[in-house]
Amino acid sequence: MSFEPIALLGVHIDERAPVATCNFCNGPIWWGYTARGRRNPFDVRLDNGAERTSITHWSTCPERAAARSTFVRNRNG
Image 1 (cartoon, rainbow, N blue to C red):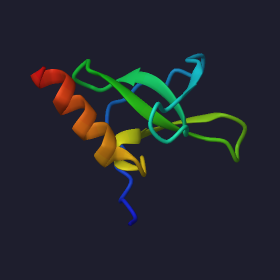
Image 2 (image 1 turned 180 degrees about the vertical axis):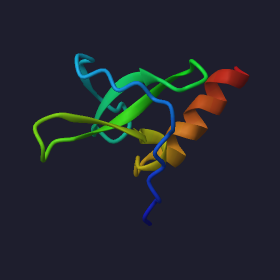
Image 3 (image 1 turned 90 degrees about the vertical axis):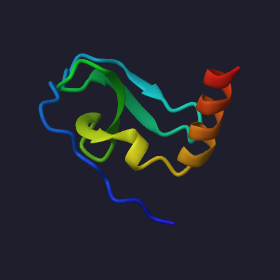
Image 4 (image 1 turned 45 degrees about the vertical axis):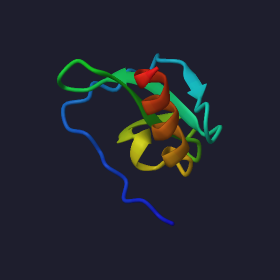
């Protein structure tokens, strides 16, 4: 199953933000803020060094269904 990457507008890409790893797919991510000030994981392209992108990782994570169900379970107790 393929996902359409979603680039968010108004994201300030902080090149100093540390590269982390997604807890579900182990893909490279960086944590930043959306234009509305919400914290969000974004993709990192490793083919150009460690280029941080404005593509939200939720749109590209192959394990996003597992991530969503875990979030809902934790939120609902």
